[in-house]
Amino acid sequence: MHVSVDLKVLYFGTPVVLLGTCNEDGSGNVAPMSSAWWLGQSAMLGMGNRSKTMGNLVRERECVLNLASSDMAGAVDRLAPLTGADPVPERKAAKGYRFEKDKFGAAGLTAQASEAVRAPRVAECPIQLECVVEQVHPFGEGASAVEVRVVRAHVEERLVIPGTDYVDPVGWDPLIMKFCEFFGGGTNVHASTLANAWKMPHQEVRLAAAG
Image (cartoon, rainbow, N blue to C red; front, side, top):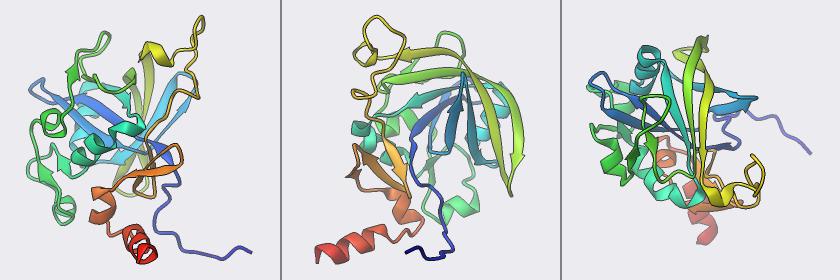
């Protein structure tokens, strides 16, 4: 039996991307996102127009899509309440976000130089995709869909099927954001600051079940 539901969130499960961009002063910025999908050698990224990352993408026309593995949930959660925008937008401030200039350091991540773009890679991410921005499309209210093209891909050697240019789908365990919660291998792997900030009911349900 199905029931009609006015769903508040449609994040059914997408890989977490740590999006590396360059700030105005040339320093590196990194931000977690989970609204990304791929087709061929291109990807479409969805995000709010007022974010620091969006400003960097529009100005610099390049980025790195660093794909996080499931064991990186702690670092991603440390990034979740941070923003490179100063002052912090009111909507984010109300949810507990704070400004942080050095987001790499705050999350315990390592910036790594790219080869084809200026934007930074995240050394801890097993898959890193250097990209250029092709187009920015208005999407919904206050958001945009950014079309990017992959110009160079880096993959940890252990994840490449020997003798091929393919990623081993068994060895690769991406961190998945599912309804604002962190999952890996089908298991909830880490508590989510983001779910708490957005007042998601999941933690209350788990606590009730445990009780």
